[in-house]
Image 1 (cartoon, rainbow, N blue to C red):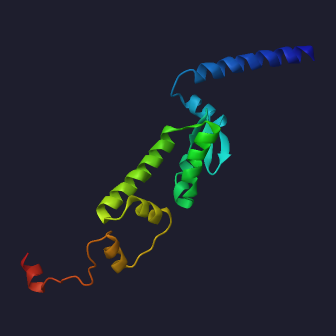
Image 2 (image 1 turned 180 degrees about the vertical axis):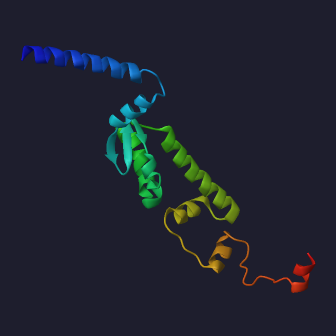
Image 3 (image 1 turned 135 degrees about the horizontal axis):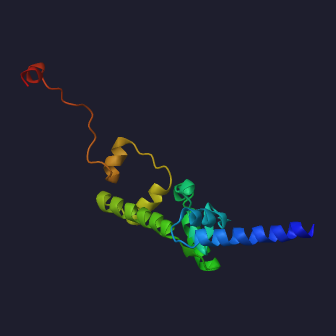
Length: 152
């Protein structure tokens, strides 16, 4: 039995050195796998890895499903001392940029556009013109005469 524990200890040390050596190279595949293994779910589709809040690729639509999560991510950052991962910052930045662009193009306020795009906001064609999303509603398309098509 003593031999078993000695060999198990040796295997454990060897495995530890191997893992340490593989993860020592930044950007290695093994490092990415180890990061995922160290990930901890903190709720609301957020994951904490190395004191950073991450939004995993499978949860990219988390803010569209529940806009309150945008407030929650900042709560986690403030109350728990986590930093935002570069991916989370990019998602928030893109959401803000989209709201800004739509507000600029439609003439609506950025707050109104952000609120309206949080959930499904369905409009009729006339409402879309009034809102400023489209310029005009095309009800019929002019058909070219047959002679004009044959001449080409």
